[in-house]
Image (cartoon, rainbow, N blue to C red; front, top):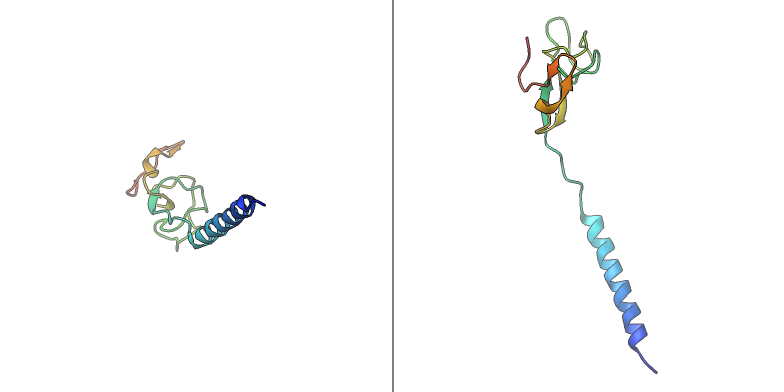
Length: 92
């Protein structure tokens, strides 16, 4: 009688259990965000939309230069809109 298949099966189960336990300890990486001005559609900004507005969802115009959306860090200035590119600072 050979014990090799039993040992091989036990090894597979042990490796599978170890991988499952390691995976359950992993947390998704937190994505750093930054404010990107001039990219929000009307009413879809995350905050700051100028005088007469309170905060999130209060922008009055599409791509309003003084309203912002949170976007993944490093992507803002690459966002193209009909009025230009996203900005890390408020637009006039």
